[in-house]
Image (cartoon, rainbow over all chains, first blue to last red; front, top):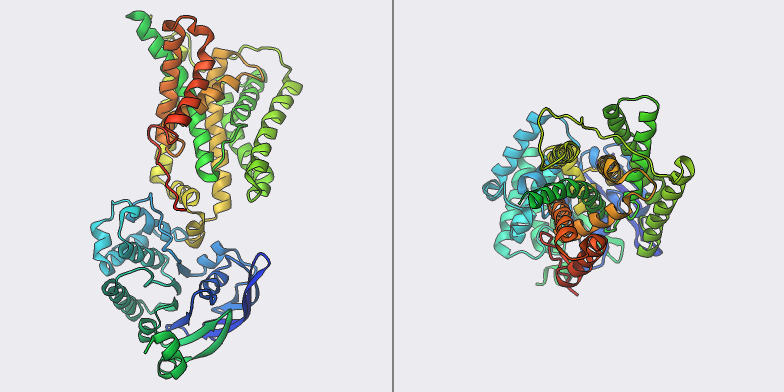
Amino acid sequence: MAFLEVRGLEAYYRQTQALFGVDFVLDEGSITAILGANGAGKTTTLRAICRMVRTDGEVVFDGQDLSGLSTERVVGLGIAHVPEGRGTFVRQSVEENLQLGAYTRKNKADIAEDMESVYGYFPRLGERRRQQAGTLSGGEQQMLAIGRALMLRPKLMLLDEPSFGLAPLIVQEIYEIMARIREREGTSMLLVEQNASIALELADHAYLLETGRVVMGGESSLLRDDEDVRRSYLGY
Amino acid sequence: MDLFLQLTLAGLAIGSIYSCVALAVVMIYQATDHFNFAQGEMAMFSTYVAWTLVGLGAPVWLAFLLAVGISFLAGVVIERVIVKPVENAPVLNQIIVFIGLLVIFNAVAGWIWEFTIKPFPSLFPEDLGFKSTLIGPHHLGVIALTLGVLALVFAFFRFTRVGLAMRAAAANPDSARMVGVSVGWMLALGWGLAASIGAVGGILVAPIVYLEPNMMAGVLLYGFAGALLGGVSSPGGAVLGGLVVGVLENWVGQYVPGGSELKLTFALILIVGVLVFKPAGLFGRVVVRRV
């Protein structure tokens, strides 16, 4: 059985159905990307996994069925979410944001160690650790969101458009750090992106989502070479 | 000059009680965006609980601590049982629930303890070992105790893990949930804490205004004025606002002709004035929304 297995996932916002039976799997230690246009259901897929929308269908993580769990419990299982819009606690300091990421953990020495390792990945956060997080630039806030997720020592990271609204150079930097995190920590990642080219570079597998359905999936290279994907999502 | 100092010190004492009420109101406001109109009546009820415990023979300090503890539990229960079910209801429904709570607490207190005015013992001894013509022992004790309590509350929010989680849950519930904070329980905890802080205010004001079911009506109004003056988005500002209102109230009572009749009017003028000219208060953030 795969590390994360999603079968027949449906999601609803009140009466409106947003996902219509999404299936995909993710292997331990791998990075899987979900690509798609605006409104395809990418964010909803992530929110469904961490139980923030009403869902139907099956999500099994590390052998455990997630349906019926609260978001807090899902987080407790080691699933960290880097949300759409970064979810910064704007009035809290950088350091407090990171402490919140470790909220479900108890061992203070481990937490302090992980905080240093986050500052290692993102030296700029270390320089600004006492600064109010709301005053950070967009790129820094994205780094903070990833750092906050790392503070959980997650087994699986859900990343919602880490490239959103950032300059190409910053996007490059953030993706390089994500690659380094996977290499060093072996963290599995489920990545949602509109920026298909950079996502396909990092991911091992990818799925293509259109109006709440998976229309294609496979190794990243397979999607990269596909004529339709290239024309519609890569733009060349 | 002595009179001026006396008025100012007494104003600080009563103002620190307003600060407690203001802080309780602001804590709930930050988490829910609503004023808890029942905050004063909850504090009044807590004071009656303390009074009952004293009547049963408990030392007044023990009664104080027990009442504050009981208020905490009651606050948690009220949030879970009454407030939570309407948390997604329209604004007006929620306000009506708060006003309903106010009326219920008032009526039930009158029903259990009657509406007659009762004296309430001070927590502080008559003789503090020194005499001052500027401030009485109760007022001095009130200032010391409330400042101590407020410092504790701020330390709790600033330096503890749960305090940080409560701030996070109030500011950004979605993100808080995503790092594993149980936002619902943080809210309940906030209600408990607010009820406790209110109880401190009620028990301290009772020896001054005497115990009766309507004793918090004026105090709540001054507390609102303090909260608005300081800024409803700033707990520290609310505390400072409470102190300022207490002092101003005394000055107005003494130095404005006919002022002693106008004290409550002054609080209302202050509320309206702040809302019209500086809605964010002295220390609050101005929230700009893009449309």
